[in-house]
Image 1 (cartoon, rainbow, N blue to C red):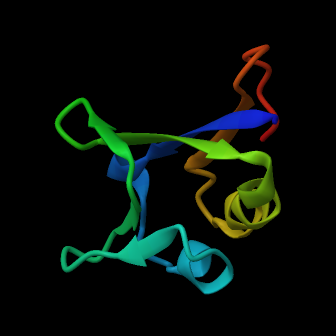
Image 2: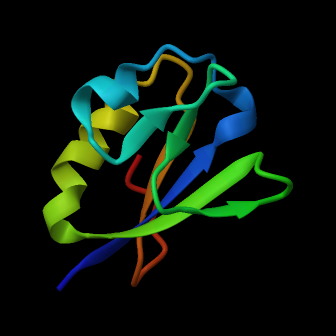
Length: 84
């Protein structure tokens, strides 16, 4: 089964909540920024990472596309190729 690595630059999030509207992997935090559910935090929570399976890819891709500040990045887990 194909896997993907999602990298979210939380520090640059503006709290538009577009990701939460299209994908249940996202939730708004009380500080006004989105959080990637069940992710691993890096660099004092300025970056969040999560490995997703192929079944979650379409919704995550949509979340990345609707983000107005382009802070959600998706990579092919096997090759490391950036998809978005």
